[in-house]
Length: 392
Image: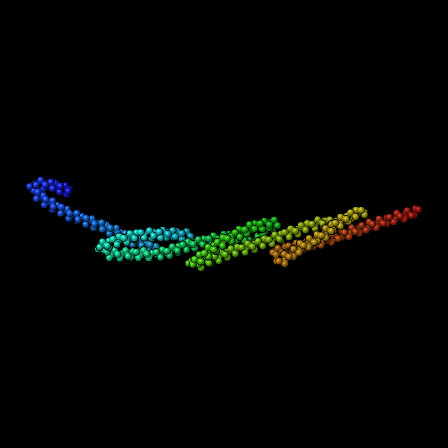
């Protein structure tokens, strides 16, 4: 618009219009006023920009101060978690806080730049701006150490709770296995005893397999203690409890294994004694036979058979002596089944002695009968010979 007026005015002046002098003066005055208004407008724009910039800065400083306050309050919380889940949640939350702290460095730097710009521009609040910015920077820098300290504390807490969980799981499994190791029930026959031994052998494999897991708990705890963990004393105590529980389980399992092995020994010996008793019963039936033969040939046959039987009876005495010796050994060891086994062994020994006596008696009777038959035969032969002589 101004250029259009200047152009039109210049045209009238060039044509030497009767009012050329007034037109020129009015145009000059208009240009002066426009210049003054332009300068004033530029100044107003500058001041508005500065005002907005100062408002944005003030808002940024207020936000930063509020954020600093929230972080400072968050760091006052001393809760490190009661279990692994809560400790991990707190760790995750703190990790986000630490990341937010790092991200706010850019924001603080931008506020620094703005504050210097405002101060250099001679802002009327320059002193207050400088003081506020310095305080915020100091508070920001002061958060680094507590954040790092809390990061380590939460890391240690998570590691501690992980250790506690590992230890608790191992103790729980060992508590479940302990009643099996403490069992005292015993089978009443050899088959049952052997079955118990086989079952316990599988159980012992499971118990022995716990050793690496217990060692893993111990090693993890030792690693934490080597890092000067704040709960080193509790960790050491927990390690001792886990190792103690495992030692108790192993000792009880070994004691149970010895008991079951002793049960098998006793049941095996009782089976062997019963087998020996069966053999004695079979031979006793033969040895107690009162048939000695009605003539010499039958008696000789019976004697030959009994000689074999008597040899078997004598050989069987060696087996019985071995069984009695085994029973005596159990008695000397204080074996829990010593009384039962000893009673069976004593009865077996008595039955063997009775068998030997019965066999010896039959052998003597057969010998006497054979001698009688031989005597009769010789008498008959002598009589026949005398009869032949008398006839002659």
